[in-house]
Image (cartoon, rainbow, N blue to C red; front, side, top):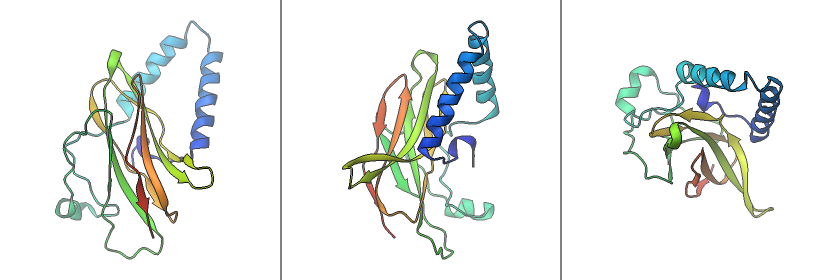
Length: 182
């Protein structure tokens, strides 16, 4: 699982971003832009933050030898401003938990040289009558136009969900709502 695919609670992501902002302010104004440029370069070279669209989706838990036989082709690049979500086929082994994995795809366009994007899985709250953050992935970036992927996993929590892709600069795109049942 790549760095961009780790699933962390949304509250932890917000806390980490606040701590990161505070440390950047404390670094001083003279070295701040230089340190930021080095950090972005290191992150870009050290971690693949997006996958090309021509890769095939491999079922969760499939052995490397099975991947070619069971691979599901990924459709062409999604339309701008949309997020496409598909269910990943479950493994043949019986799973005692209600475990569902989804494949979310969105198109990110880097306007002005760089685009920072952030994935979130939102869950419908009947009590609050609104979408609430359920899972979040760490922010990532790209310097060109590309299709980005995320594979959130929902375990033993049926309900209505949708995926949010927030791009800065740009906007926010949402998938259609989908229902998870056990």
